[in-house]
Image (tube, rainbow, N blue to C red):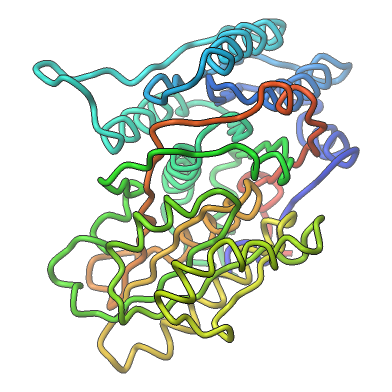
Amino acid sequence: MLWDHYVFRRGDAVHELWDSLLKERPIELLYIAGRGFDVRAKTVMSEFVVGQQSAGRQTRSATLLLVGLHDYELDEGLGQLTEENATALKEIFSPLGRTKMFAAATRDGEDETSASDMLRQRVKAVLDEIDGKTDIILDVSSLPRATYLALLISILERLVPSKLVDESATHPLYARGVNFQVFVAEDAELDGYIRAEDPSNDLVNIPGFFAAWQAESVQDWPLVWFPVLGEGRVNQLQKIAGSIPMEAEICPVLPHPSKNPRRADRLLVEYCDPLFDTRNTPISNILYANESQPFEAYRQLLGAMQRYLSSMSILGGCRLVMSPLGSKLITLGAGLACFEMRPADLTAKFGVAIPHAEPRRYLASAESLCQSDPDVSVLLLTGEAYGTQD
């Protein structure tokens, strides 16, 4: 297990982490955020920038890469909020460095660009910026699910080319000393109120996980599906379910523990028809993952995937399919589990896939967004903290 020991902080402990991680050394920083309507991104950026300006911290260079999200339909209120948010993020970051904007472009001769192609463009734009950086920050607070999962896994693939943990060598998460942090301004209740509408019929697959979904050679392998459930995502789940064989083993993942002790029960009611009435999924297949502790969710999901892989090895192979539709922290845990489970080569007798039905439209209350009081959390995924085996 790569993150057998991990670094995760929330609330006031976030500043203690930054003090120990960023003081008394020159910082070459890349800060990645979304040019979206979710104002929670301002909360975490403000706290980071104020801390970085304090005594004992030296910012040699810093770049804010704002990833454009113009391919989604928004009402007038959310569109205006997007523009105001982008201006505010640029202003907040200005004491540290410059801002670069990136927007996926339509190819010559095409009327529109597919969601998969836009996702690949965003990943490439970010990977082109990370060389030479001592510190990389991915702020998922204002990024869509498919985008931040693709960026998370692609950056980890670049920094951690080998996932083999050898006690006689430097831990692979040391990653040549590059500190990769993920920032989350988390409000699980608000995530449930942001509605994703009109999911595309063409499923998006996270880059690097396509073969396990579409390759002809794996179609006869049994399939285990892990839908991570969140409010208001039934339409997206049904689009994905259309490509899941009826004989597949289904393990719904519910958030528990949760701030709302009734949340898991309400999700069971919401998803009763597509998962339990239509598919006859046994209640005993339900998995529980910690809503607010991503590394615990990672351990729970990784353990479940490994157990199914072991039990199905006698059948010649299997496909493990993850559909993260929950709130941000539990989705990050699912992404880490898929990153670690992804086979190192094409000869492996199993595959991991992350198909996603990308919504075309988002609906949310601008007032609810502005009134949100999120908890700031930080995951430190690579760097100096993992430099020893202790």
